[in-house]
Length: 597
Image (cartoon, rainbow, N blue to C red; front, side):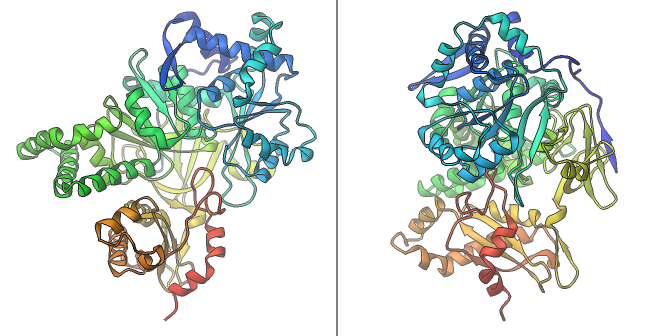
């Protein structure tokens, strides 16, 4: 199939904007809990009326500070309650929000705030303020800077004490559906990040249709979401807006190290994450079981979960034997795994990279259905996703209702719909290249099945061509290899080479566990990298990856690196995408070593 679409389930208000949502919630359901706020060690409920009052207080301060309609305001913070509050406050003052990753360097901060023309900025910590101050002399248009941990909200409330509610409501009404809501800068795997202009219409079309299609998991007064992904990224942002639109209770976690504790306390019904999160949960549970001498039980339970899930899609349903084993392991294993996730979650949403069919079946088999989706910053997040009632594990689902997915002659995925961005900020050439006749060219390669379910097979620009002329899509095998507990990152190489190779980094969390289990806890990391047993274990991961591709596409040799691919090292973006050209340049010697005789 070359093209597939679904009718819209939600009508975008022509002259409305996202601030309408918080006023609607407060007017229609003032006492409904819409957010959870961490105060010390306790979670406190925030009602729709309370949230509107706090947003208005902050918006008054922004108006008093001189923020005008259309002004860009930077927001640099971890995922926390204040992020959502300030997002809606800036919109309520008529402004356009410019997210900045809290891990950004001074140079990145300068580029984003300078390119967007930000007139003010809110930062979270003194450290963030220090990063900003280091480049402030190169940002002549930047005015006030507020610091969340320095009392930004109280400062704004005090400054806006003389601004009326009516003045805020009038300012809130200035933006229309087609006004810019935010400039989200792409991660920038190559070159400078580009500012994607996402309008209020983009979010309405995206979140309104997604919530309608996933209605059973967005139930007001029943459902809740714990957000721990960066809200500076469009994936986290769309979940934030969707939660307010539904509305359902939304909580935030700033530090993923406390995630297990917060999941137990908040007890969400819906979890969202990237595949690495779900891989880590699985690998950690398996490692703990092995450490407790229950590794074989866990592995049998995992195989049962996968068999049970696969049988749900097979003619005839689940065989009696599988049902009985599933019931047994639910008592022994699955309930404990669900408890780690808070005990109430029935669904999860995954994006950013392929989850993998095996892991998808594992989670559904234990009672947590992971709905994979696909999207980009330019598509305001998810442009396809698996519906709750018609999931196809291994695909990224059907198009967002009201949108169209087309496969071009060369296999590229093209998108059309109201949710798309309106262009790149201050970059007409890039906009013209990406948007043609209303179609956004994603740069991804994919296929559509007979029911309109999309499968992504690789990136157009990342396709390797070996010396033998074989086209290789790295993502397929990289994702399989990276699923192994010992593997942190994997980058396939082989462009114009005689065969495919791979650079692999080791997971710093699981390496010590593995070494201790093998009686090698005292071994130096350098010795472990050349340890025959570890090499054999990594070879098993590579073999598993090779099983997904043809022989010509399979990895023949690999090199284990003595470092990590991190944002600080410049090898991955804030959203954890590999900067392949940087890795290839920095590890050119390691790549050459793969191809030495």
